[in-house]
Structure formats: C-alpha cells, structure tokens
Length: 264
Image 1 (cartoon, rainbow, N blue to C red):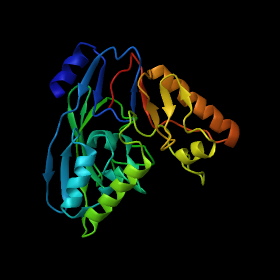
Image 2 (spheres, rainbow, N blue to C red):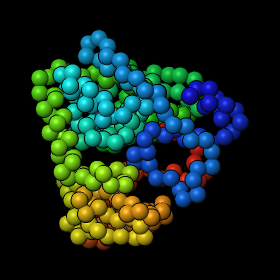
Image 3 (spheres, rainbow, N blue to C red):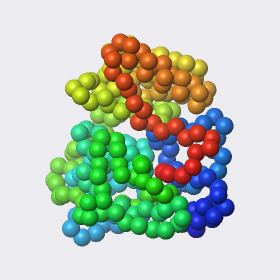
C-alpha cells in the first residue's frame, strides 16, 4: 500500500482508501483517481490482553473471535459490516460502546508513504461520539492496523450473541444500505432513527432510495437508487425533522465527490 501511495502522491493522482464501503457514498460519476482496497488482513493476539488487527479485517470478524476467546470490549462489533480501519476512523459504536474505548494504538501511513504509530499512552488518541483524531488529520492516507486492549470475561460470548440477535431483529442487515445515515443528535433527544419513526418517515422514497421500514436510520437501495436519489432523500429527511422538531441532523455517512482527494 505504501508503494502505491508514494506513486500516486508523486504523480499527483487523487487516492481514496476503502475498506468494505460502510458509511460511504460515492458520486454517481465515480471517483476521478485511484481507489485502494485495504486488504491488510491479520489478527495477532499479544500479551496483556492485546489484539493487533490489520485495518482490512472485518470488524465483525474481530468482535466474534475475541468474544469466543473470552475477551470483552468488542462484543458490540458483531454484525457491524465495516473493517477495523473503518471502525477506528469513524469511532464506530453500538449498545453504549465505542471503538475508541478499547483502542491502545493505531498504525497509519501518510500520503507520502511514511508510517507512524499513535498510542493512547502518549495522549495521541482522543475520541468522541463518531469522531476520531483521524478524520481531520493532515496528510493521512490510510489506517493500516490497530491494537485493542481487552479484558477477560466469561460472559463475552453470551453478550456478543445477544447483540447480534438484537441487530438481526431491528436492522435491515440483508438490504442494500450503507449503514446508519445520521448521527444521533444527543442533548436528551431521541435517537435519529426514533425521531424519523416518530415523524412517520419510514417508507419515504425518492427514486430508488427509501427510508427503511425496519429501522428509519437506514436508507435502502430498492434496486435502482443513484447517489443523487440518496442525497436528495437525506436532505428531505433533514428538512422535515428540522421543521417538526427543530433538531438538526448531521450525516454519519460520508459522501465521496468525484474529485475527492485522500483519507480513509
């Protein structure tokens, strides 16, 4: 990956490093540059309850494996359709847990192809709701790997299975979606999905894009949705929520324009 990034940087070719595509919406015209699929895939158990995983590993895979081994901290990852790199970048979370809670260090590569490791002990990893230090990091090209510090627990596997069952029951996991669209508003407000549900927005459609009938914070491609359909539907949902509740929703999904340059 570093060799490709160095080449693209030298030749001034825009790059975009992609995991599994969760929370990502590409422009209908595609991407005018080089899309690099992150396939850094390994899981290495270490000392002191540490697990190092390549950024291309499925986050779901890591959550299931660590729970089966009797470690708690990543049970919530079960069913999340992204990669380790994407989960770290977005600070993915569910069931009151977040990725950043258990990250010990993160290895990155810059647009120039140089490597760097950021650690919790050095105070280099600051997290907040759906926000990581990598989202605004100058010169970041890709997350390469992350090390997680977990705790032993005899109930980890049971919790993981419970979380997975809840996801199956409440989310459209077999539909064509890009994951949750909106961040939860906080401030004592209901979740984004609950707000949309309360306003009767389930089933609202524009073109081939539809607000999921199962969970309103998912937009479903019913078969012919374009990026424009989804963006227009997002704007319509935000407008209706603002008009009815004064709550301003913000996207969790990341739109990638035709001329976008770099960052995971």
